[in-house]
Amino acid sequence: MSLSPHLSAVFGPGAPDLSWQEDFYQDLHMHPELSHTEERTAAKILERLSLMDAEIVDGIGGFGIVAIFRNGPGPTVLFRADFDGLPVAEETHVSYAATDGNMHACGHDMHTTALLGACALLDEGREHWTGTFLALFQPAEESSMGAKFMLADELTALVPAPDLCLGQHIMPGPAGQVCSKPGPIMAGCDSLRIRIFGKSAHASMPHNSIDPTYIAAMIVIRLQAIVGREVAPQEFFVISVGEIHSGDKNNIIPETAELVLNTRFYDPALAERVYASLERMVKAECAASGSPAEPTFEYFAHGEVTDNDPAADVAIREVFDATFGAESVDAEPSTASEDFCYLPQAWNVPYYFWFIGSTPAEQLDDPPVNHQPTFLPDYKPTVAASTKAAAAAVLTYLSR
Image (cartoon, rainbow, N blue to C red; front, side):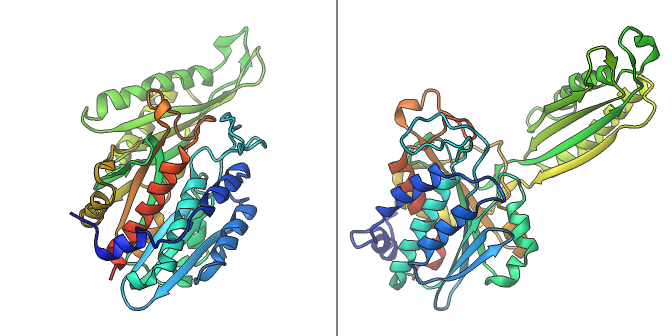
């Protein structure tokens, strides 16, 4: 398949000059802002959007922004990029590295740069498409609250309803590859805080205690038995213990202990079954040790499974294959999670999400991964692929 004339024209010799993207990207990378504090980043996005013919709605759910590009009758397509950083001290040693203890360690600076580039391509190539393009810039993805806050701030009433939502994420892999698939592409997740009750005593008199630290240790061991013996081998489920808190003095057996867990899954129904087993097991361990009160369970930081629409996969993958050739490949589903799909769920519309490879060739044998202090995309192939993929996916539906 070859590119349609309209797609070829948007990406061809007459396409807009996007050389500004590198300075923009480096500026964002040097000045990462944590979730819910992204004031400077939002101002930089608005400054670039002010050069385009778009209706701007900003301050949504904090620092959220939507640029509305209206161009006659036709479908409405939304593309989302996130723009918050992480509390990670950067160790990349590039000239534009952040130095304040925070970092764009997940590539949100690249996501934002690419979407702004796609906005420029569509803004200046209006003769090649018709409809409405929504460029949504989302804060606070890392807290899992950014999309929810924008929706709570009446996002759906502030912008036209999309017919389809799109998004992408840079990941480890050959820089410039575009990786897509139908069905689940990113995992769902939950965090779970478990509080265990015991009876305090002097450490020299353990027989006078009910030791919650011991109970917590037994629970940690038994958690993996749920995955190993109650989840079918061909299914996917991960339980990780991220935090254990118990006591604050070496010679006192404490009264309580706390575990904080994180889970990942592709099947929400399986997750519900695992949680039922987990609560049963924790209660049984507490009862076996004579705990004076039942444990408590607090679920938080839920993330939905990102589950791509099959029809969108057929349409967009055909365009990706024509646009990128051998660099358009099948994606392996990621066990990481996203809050992207809360947006299409709010409008009850289909969605499609894909990955862009970002690893420099010399690091492919042992690539740094997202959230590591050494994670840094190979700029030129990554920005080119992510900008073109964003525009190509939108034009799959809006091209004349």
